Image (cartoon, rainbow, N blue to C red; front, top):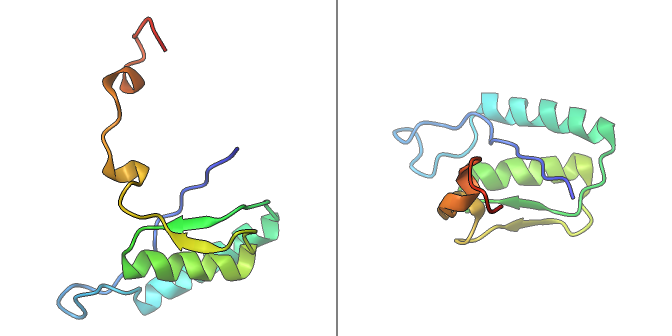
Length: 97
């Protein structure tokens, strides 16, 4: 299994829009990268995103170019980036993997 991580594009400031959607520059960045990834023809099962608007916009744009088998969905609250790893996972010197 391969996992590809993509950061959302540039977002509007909170002062401009509290939901912080992609800015015009962000839309252009995301589309440019998504087109390139689509040309690589990587087999993708699905695209997951956080609940933030800019992340969903990025994921949905990518889906237009890479056509994931199971589509796009919100990852939910139990995503890897919201949980702390066990100390044994973070230590390379641990005798027990």
